[in-house]
Each structure stands twice: as C-alpha cells, then as structure tokens.
Image (cartoon, rainbow over all chains, first blue to last red; front, side, top):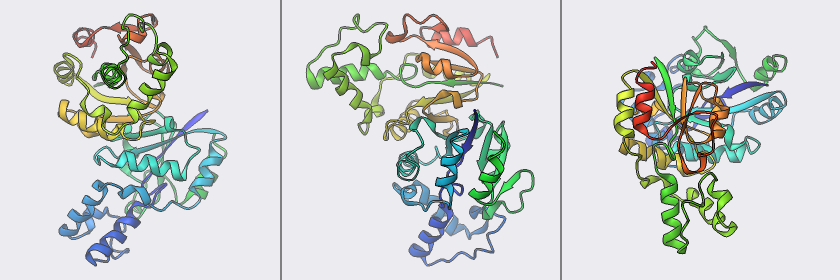
Length: 177
Length: 177
C-alpha cells in the first residue's frame, strides 16, 4: 500500500485565516489579500506586524480551533481505502503546537490513529510515496513525489503538480495506488 | 552525510528508572529488577500495578525531569561532526509528552536544532541510515540499519547489532560514515 504524507496548516487547517482574523481583532490592521499573493506573510507585512503574527503560533491553544479545509475529512477517509495516510506537520519550533494539533486532529480526524501522526521540523526525514504540502521548502526536501497544495503564498511556484482543493486530490490519487 | 535517528526513552533518558521510583514512592511497591529482565513492565507486573505505571506517561511533566543516559551528551556531539543526528521519539499517545520532551531536549541537548526533533508513533515513517532504539518493534519497522540499545526488556533479542552504552555507539559509528 502506498503512503501519503499530508501537511496540516493551509492543507487541513486554515492557519492564515486565523492569523489575519486575530491580527485584525487585536490591532485593527486589515491585510489586503491581494497584496500578499505570491509572498509569505513575513515578507509582505510591515515589520511591526510581522513580529506580532510570528508570535501567534507560540501561544498556548492557537492551533486548537483552526477552521478545517473543505472536503478534507471525506476525501482523506476515502483515500484510506487504498493508501496509508500519515499527518506530518513541521511544528517543532512552537512548544505548545504538538499538543494543540494532536487534540485538533482527534476532533476532526478521529479515524486517524495516533501512530500515524508525525511532528517534525524538516520533511527530508519522512519516508512516504507522496507529500501534499503548501510549502515549497518541504516539497524540495522530500524524497517521494511532491504535490503542491495551492495557498496564497505559492501562486508563482511552478515546479510541482498543483492541487487547488481536496476534490482535486481525490481525482489525482483515486487512480494512482 | 549519513543520518542517525536516535530514540529517547532508555537511550537518551532513563524512563523506566523514574517509573519504578514513582511507583515505589506512591504505592510502596518495589519491583524486583531481576524478575523483569527480558519482559516489558506491562508483562511482568501484577495487573493493578500495570494500570498505574501505564498512567504515568500521560501526566503533565512526567518526561520533564528524567535522568540522562551516561555519555550521551558527549558522544552525540562528537557524532555530529560526521553524521546528521535526528532525535526520534514514538510518543504521540501521550498528549503532554511532546512538549515535555522538547523542553528536556533543550536543557540537555541544546546543540540539537528543533528541526532535527521528530515525534511520531511508528518509525517506519523515518528516513535515515541508522536507528538506535531499545524497542525491537521500532527496529523491525525501520528501513535503514537497526542498532539495538540494551535495556532490561530486550536482553533476549538477538536479531540486531547491540550496543550496551554510548561509548559502544561511539566505537561502532566512529568509522562507518
């Protein structure tokens, strides 16, 4: 059975949506969604706001209530018929994130066994056939077949097969096992 | 550069020593060290004590103050000259363990980058050249070269190269890179 490694933030969970909402609520600063396309938040916000948004993921509980990506629950459950699924999140720089993320996965993906969850820092350590991820740096490091999940920051990335949503993942992988 | 994955409990940290100490302090029950040789604690204690000791790793802070294995700091630092070192702990069933273990690693192995720490459930997901581990089930699942670190429960295991301490790891790996 082939193995798919699936990233969390921007693939299963709407991380940036919560970051921008929190920034607006706490500082009043509204990010122009068009202005950040093709760039990371850390490269597109004024420095004083970069410092604020990079502090959020260190907060206890920040990852606990992210919204879920449309269709991810249904498609991942279907893919489990033909693939081994591992959730792989690069989150070791945030001391509270593994606990919050594990609890979030228990809520939204109760059918994912705890043994199939991996928290790491560098995805070159992952042994799998596919990696679905929004971050080019993780796809670069990965040794299997990379699949880019569309996100605001990666619109100019053309090196990888791209999927825009979970229905496209279903179509792409329903015949490859 | 070849890559070594290193387990934590019973390899870098004295997990069972704290379990037995806690059991004695809290219940008065003293484990006969000879009686548990070659068996897991879960297979060698009376059932009522098995339930108690398996609850310990779920406690917040349990992994925070484990004693460190002799020579592990010095040898790991030396090995970093010739190998990539990843710390790989199968700990996803304990919700507080990743935080406690990451903080413990910061204290005792500050030279290990957070990107080189992995918390998982199943070590078949790990892509590395060597795995140093006391658990045969992880060595079985691993796809590189397995190295068994001696522990009370694995004395009858003969399928793998065995090291009894960190000085033996240094000798074994100082010429293999």
